[in-house]
Structures are given as structure tokens and as C-alpha cells.
Amino acid sequence: MDRLLASEKNAESEKSWSMEKCQENERLRDDLKVAIDFKKSQEANFSQLSKLKSDIDELKKKLTCLETEKHTDQISNRTEKAKLRMRLRGTQHKLEAALFRHSEAVEELDLMNRNYEAASQKLKDKLSLYCTEVLALKKQLAAKGH
Image (cartoon, rainbow, N blue to C red; front, top):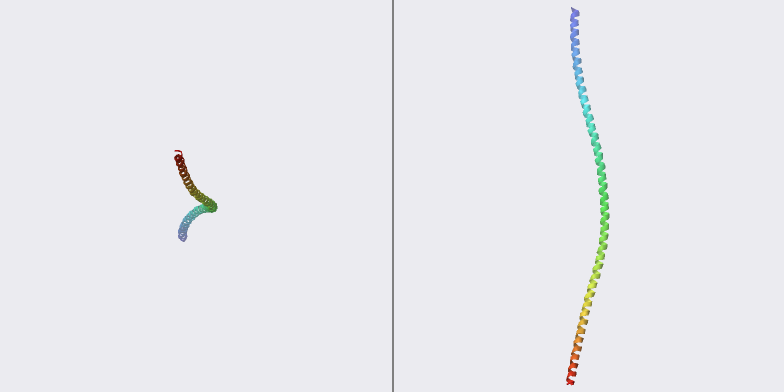
């Protein structure tokens, strides 16, 4: 009977030990599933992070290109503005010279017109004087011829 009791205790202890092992195995399976899920999540995050880093690098390159383009455009615009300012100055000088020549020509024409008017008036006065003399002479001739 002792043997039977010992055998029953042994069977109970094995059953208890077996249940503990089953529970430990299930806990380990659950831990393994959690670890696998965590690893998959980490891999997905790493993939997203790699893609984001790639996108950032591409955007940095585009930004650098745009900044270089902008700088080149600014230099080109400054150069173009300087050229246009020089052309404007040259054109302004030509305009001022043309205006000066024009005003001199207008003044000269005004002077010539005044001189012409004065000379014309003198000639009219002389012609009037000669006409008066001719009339006087004609009257004298007419008076003598009668």
C-alpha cells in the first residue's frame, strides 16, 4: 500500500509538474509571439524610417539645386540690371545732348526769325520810301508834261 500511495503521490506530482511545464510552455509561446510581433513592428518601422531618410535626402538635394538656381538667377539679374543701368545712362546722355542741340537749334531759328523780321521791316520801309519818291517824281513829271 505504501507503494501505491507513493505511486499516487508520484503521479500527482508528475501531473502537477506536467501542468506547470504546459503553463510555462504556453507562457513562452505567448512571449515568443509578442517578440515576433515586436520584431515585425520594428522591421516595418525601420523600413519606414529608411524610406523617410531617403525622402529627406532627395528633398535636401532638390533644395540645394533650387538654392543654387536662385543664387544664379540673382547674379544674372544683378548683371542684367547693371547692364540696363549703363544703357540707361548712355541713353540719358544722348537724350540730354539731343535736347541741348534741339534747344540751340530753336534759339538759332528764333534769332534768325527776328533778324529776318527786322530786315524785312527795313526793306519794307525802304521800299515804301522809294515808292513815295517814285510817286513824287511821277507827279513832277506829270506836272511838267502838262
